[in-house]
Length: 308
Ligand SMILES: [Zn+2]
Ligand SMILES: [Zn+2]
Image (cartoon, rainbow, N blue to C red):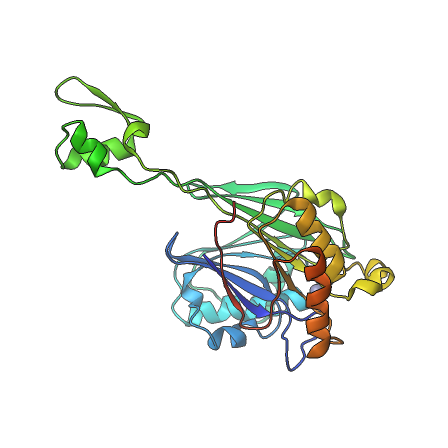
């Protein structure tokens, strides 16, 4: 799993930073990518990467401010032209369906793939064999959400040595043993899967939050996240301004990461007032509280490791 940051600025695009969008690429895990927010110019940013819109399976919109959604109709439409045929589901707050329907209808856009729109509320969005995805409510001028992705633990590998010790010869039975909790062998013995597997791989937890005021209570929901992506619109001393504009400072984001026991913190959604040296300064501020902090820039890529 890798994160690709496509737009890391706030409000309006600048030369250095486009407006919000990031992609979680899971080619090994499920052969697809998930997109989080889709600010204007997102498809243009994608052209500078090796991300393939055809592979997009889901798009999660945190909130309906323009810097997070003005690129959505264009991306959906281009995906159709580029031969995307598999279904896409777009998740986001109330109003999302109307926005998409009207944009596509008025522009005479007909998609050649099934598009599903799910307006979300706080709680679990879905569960499949790999992930549980949950939405948490944030505090912003508009209804805004964070998405928590909990990857399920992966079974360990079969241990050929252990199987050999038990006198089980390689063959289709190996697959059976791996697929079910216990397997009855032809000789009458019953093999417990857990006895012949190596250690399981703990699933990763990734939290990608939309625009928000600092919410200390979120530490519970974010507990032990391997990666937390949090906005860092303002410098540490701008707490008042952050509060007034429903945003967070980098120090607040770092405090939340620390309280949650997160593995890594990645800051995005930076105000264009911070450039060059000033960004370095923001990073230092955050790192004094939470050392494993990174400030994302456009086209920053990040492999998601297992930290816990
Ligand atoms: Zn924003
Ligand atoms: Zn916003």
